Image (cartoon, rainbow, N blue to C red; front, side, top):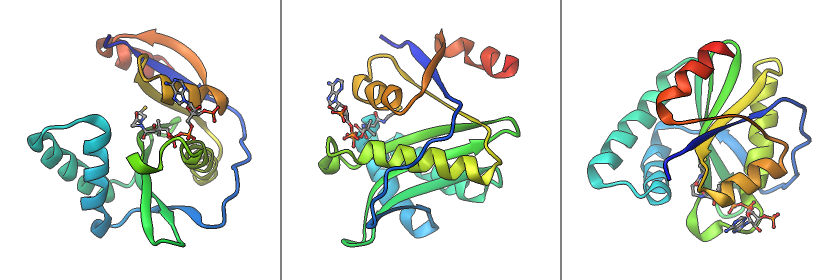
Length: 166
Ligand SMILES: CC(C)(COP(=O)(O)OP(=O)(O)OC[C@H]1O[C@@H](n2cnc3c(N)ncnc32)[C@H](O)[C@@H]1OP(=O)(O)O)[C@@H](O)C(=O)NCCC(=O)NCCS
């Protein structure tokens, strides 16, 4: 099923605390690792990985976009990633991934609560939205638990209409 759903988060969130794990702006030298992480999570082909790498590199140059790495200060490893884009009205979160071997240990919720809090602080507390496949039960569970709410249900082709109307 290819149905994409849109979830909106519109309230303050107190991020869970973890002294070792921090959300930092990614740098050029992180992009190889982030592309691999992205590829594993979204089962991309080699051609798509190249495109992803180019698009992640491009995102570092875009003033309205931040590429984030979820960094473990203790082990010096990147264990997750995400991106945020501000259109002047809403923040769009995307590319949310926790490295495979670190999943199901609460890190996705930790990343997301920090991501919502940090991005809303940067842009003066706008609403935050993201989109996902309805079949992605783990992500859906995590997002609803953190307070995201269904906005509407669209197929890919209708998404822009909602964005323009919001
Ligand atoms: C989605 C993702 C970021 C979540 O990260 P994570 O570190 O595994 O998440 P957490 O450990 O914080 O939480 C997982 C939750 O899902 C629950 N869960 C596990 N399997 C599940 C399933 N099959 N159905 C529903 N919930 C499930 C866990 O019980 C846990 O919830 P709980 O804390 O209430 O018990 C991670 O799975 C991932 O990177 N997936 C691949 C990329 C992806 O799909 N990204 C999202 C795109 S929108």
